[in-house]
Amino acid sequence: MDEELHSIMSAPVKSTILKKTVSVLLLFLAFKATVILAYLIYTHFPVQLIHFEHLAIEDVEFNDIYYSTRGEDDTFLNQPKEVVLINTGSIRADSLFRLHVADLLRKINRYGPAAVGIDLLFEPSNRSPFDVQLADAVTKQRNLVLALDKDLPGRQMFPAAHKGIVNLPIARQHGETVREYYNYLLKDKDTLFSFAFQLAKLKNPLLAARSSQEYLKYSCVYNGYYDIFNKKGPRNIHNNFPAIEATDLLNDKDTAILRWYIENRIVIIGQLGRDSMLSPWDVEDRYMVPTDSTLLHRRLLMPGTVVNANAVQALIKDEHFIEMKGWRHELTTDLILILFMVLFYSIHQTYILHKTINLFIVFASTIPIIFILGPWLMSMGIYYRTGGLFLQIAFAEEFIEIAEGFIHKFKNRKKREK
Image (cartoon, rainbow, N blue to C red):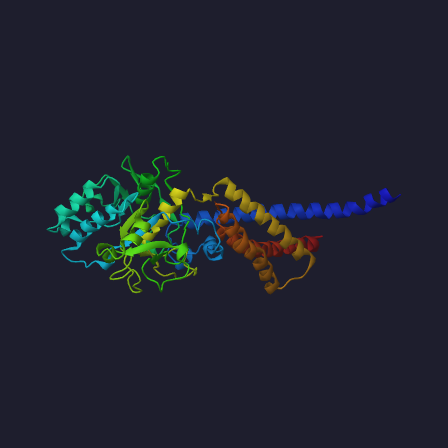
């Protein structure tokens, strides 16, 4: 008797669950079809009257929150830095500049670095009477990498044992944040290795490039460097790259300290700041980076030399992100989206909700994804872009409401016809 009663009472429940499941799946398929159609119309719109690629909002990536939320005890953040930086901005940019760089190379070589990178482009048009001295210093150092512009390779006039491209995979004029880095680039059937990859390979000859381009895992905070001789500097110096003013090195400020920082490390010579690396007004060769805590209207914060240092550190320590893309990204996104639609549809069918409550449900569903799921996956070395999911959930809420409105009108019309 009890079993029969249970069977009779559970039948309507099972029927209701089945109807809701079918309704949600149909809504999901209709929603995805609408999204795909809208995307195709947008990308192939003949006149492109509405063209949003270059708006500042386009650069927002919620995954950047990872750098603001990771703890100070993060193992990668606190690993000993393999790179030390030399700021050439403290050398006067006059006719003696190239002579000073030649002297700088000889001084550095005395301390036994693992490799030396020069993140400067010496153009043939700016010839100096000291070109011979600099060329001699460059060619004699076999563990040296010269910067190379992939678009204008002739800009680098001096020969070197190794050269590497310093170009970044961004459109700087559109105000993009540097999140990715080249390992190598194929151009005219040639393989151009990056500046960082060439330096890391001198340290570890067995290093192999996983892919041409990948997300860069930053191993520093804020602008990424500190002056080793500045006792009033930031407290969290263990998180950033040590940097030395070129004038301090040329003047042998403290040879014991200089040897401790340079010996068996990779030295990158570049521009960190005019006159001083701590100059707050110099924005030459600076980029927007995710280590900046703001998501919108970021500052030109990190010199390109420090971006290269981060890439070297990540390559040597084998710390990188595996980007979740293709069918894996789509499947993960769709599963989370279906769960949201089941939740929202069930609540919407049970209660009469106002728009404010709907928005609250959307934010209550997406905030954990943005602030927990994305950063947690990045801490595990997985780069899952959560921004697209956030937008789809927001659109799904509107889509369900519009679809339900059409369904109610259709049902009412059918009733009136009967």
